[in-house]
Length: 312
Image 1 (cartoon, helix red, strand yellow):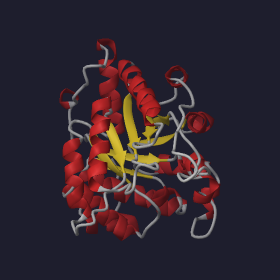
Image 2 (cartoon, one colour):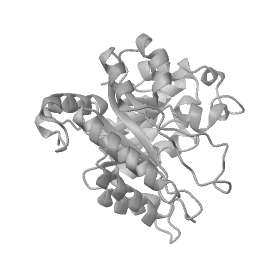
Image 3 (cartoon, rainbow, N blue to C red):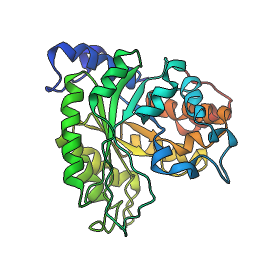
């Protein structure tokens, strides 16, 4: 299992000296001491409303928000990402989870054909720091940028300021960057995905979450991802999980993203939380087995099926 020491954590120069130890501690917490990120994305209750939590093909357990936190406690995750209010309502009962506060969100009710996407900042960093002072285990923040939207300048400015403030206070930052808007004709074009990765680096993010590229020239997606991971430089790149697929397909894609594409982890929501608690917990373990411990797909599937266990 890959392991890094405190001395091996690369601390950005915008982390204040008095916050250096806190940044290192948060980095090791979030990556479970490996330098890789297993992010459990729980921000869809705003992003996709309730259709991702109740309906055909979704386990009834997902209708209750506490399902997310039960998975986070019983499963193996690096961080649970959600909006400040969601975390505030449940964190006292789940203090052992590492939290990443999503700073902006929008619903999907207004389509791109109606207006280019803009995800507004919902609160300032002081509200997050107050939660940390109150004992909530906040290790970082997240922010979404829709690159190519006519509102991209506003989102980039908000993200840039938040990254500077977060680092100064010892927090990690994960950027969600999705090319989207009337100017974007192919959201998953490999060159655009690589461009998004480079933007995240220039803004100073620690990790960037992007959609897996969909090349049209016959190149395998994981091969195309190599260009994006090179473009991201010292910003670790992870891929979004997308809609729910069967476990073998998902785990195979994840393995290829890491070992062929150069990704340093994953960011998964629906593929985990739309399942029953037992199945969701087993899937977090299988995902973490690949992400954090370099398990093969076959061994990770054995974890998912319950034939093997995985813990840290």
